[in-house]
Length: 132
Image (cartoon, rainbow, N blue to C red; front, side, top):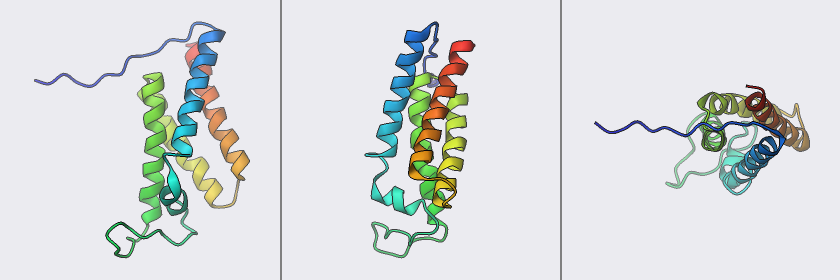
């Protein structure tokens, strides 16, 4: 029987480890939000922008933005899971990233506020790990 996939759990015992973890999470965020997002996800996740053309050249499916927003948030959740080893933080990242990005796409927050909220989320994860 194949062994199940496990990701090692990380502990934060002091300020230096907390800063290192925070730095790693922010680096992961930068990768996921910029080069790994690309124009296809960046534009396609916004329901108010015309959906991008798919690779097969056919019309985009209805509500394509939901799939693209979900894919983008899963990428972020994956980084959080791999870096922290905590599936609960990955699930929280998925949900919070979805909500924060949806608010930006609806014009309720700015680009800068969106980025600060994402970084604040990472800071909360680190604080929880440090205090646990």
